[in-house]
Amino acid sequence: TELQTNTNKLAGKNVCPLQKEKIHALQHSSGPEELWEEFKSLADELRPYWVEDQDAGRTKTTAVIEHCLEEINKHYTEADFSLYKLAEEMKLNANYLSTRFKKECGMGFVRYINQLRIEKAKILLKDMRHRTNEVAAMVGFDNPRYFTRIFKEMTGLIPSEYRSRIKTYTNMPDTRDD
Image (cartoon, rainbow, N blue to C red):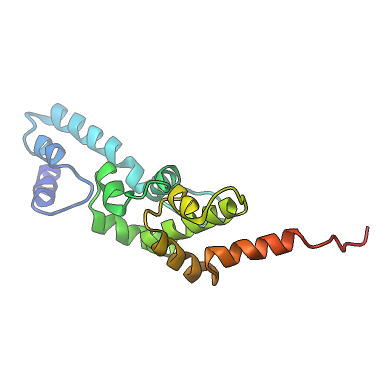
């Protein structure tokens, strides 16, 4: 049948995120009913990869990238969180995920997660009880020097300069006219 011919074509390619077991099951189904059930199962598994968010005012972002963003928000504090771990969890090829992420988010995975970490660090740096090295670790940087370098790239200031500006700004007298 045409469906079996197409699954045979897929089996020879590194198609993401199709799992070899599913393709194998499609190829070796015993009859039309079993083939149909396997196909429906595969379609259900792949649905998140083609369903698009139709929310007005936003760019269309697939459910896959939405899920990626949710996972990043959950795990950005882990220093060892990476594109490869995320791709593995989502059963996707890392190169495929990287390309798709950049296309849909407008920036690469590393830049996105670093921006998120720096934005969170800026909030934490307002609390003077935490040392800069502690803040770095709290937002997922295991190397304080790397944290400082990325912070400066993204804000134009090193963390201590950022903190001193916050301190100066918050200690200024209120000059608003009421």
